[in-house]
Length: 195
Image: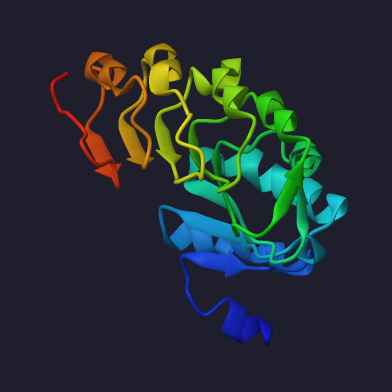
């Protein structure tokens, strides 16, 4: 696929190489938000992500970084150490993909917005990380396990947007999130809105 085909949507750059990151300045002078997305571990390097981090630092949460796909590949969360200034992060890896070093996610101290989904997530305590407490937006995608305890949300007092897909354990804490402007609850059978 040519660079022109990969970058025809002005709101995103798909699998950019290091020189194509220069398009970020151009795109963000014309629009409010831009998403940079990577479909596999062969699509980024430490060097590319380090350069991307300079743009994360410059544009803040206007620049979203997304990791998706990774079909038959392993996603190593340690790669996130190369983008310590990312404020807007989406990780929704294919259900067949494996992952490792998930606790590296807790090292991202600048996070304001995160979309997170690993179907086979086992380390459900990752949501207790301190860097989740300052979030403004959280999108929690479906996991195979229904053991994700939403009780951690009581520490997320600044959330203005919350989207929860398939989780309901201790959902009553959502009622105490007084800054919420947008709430989406998906695939939550027998879910009570009595909060």
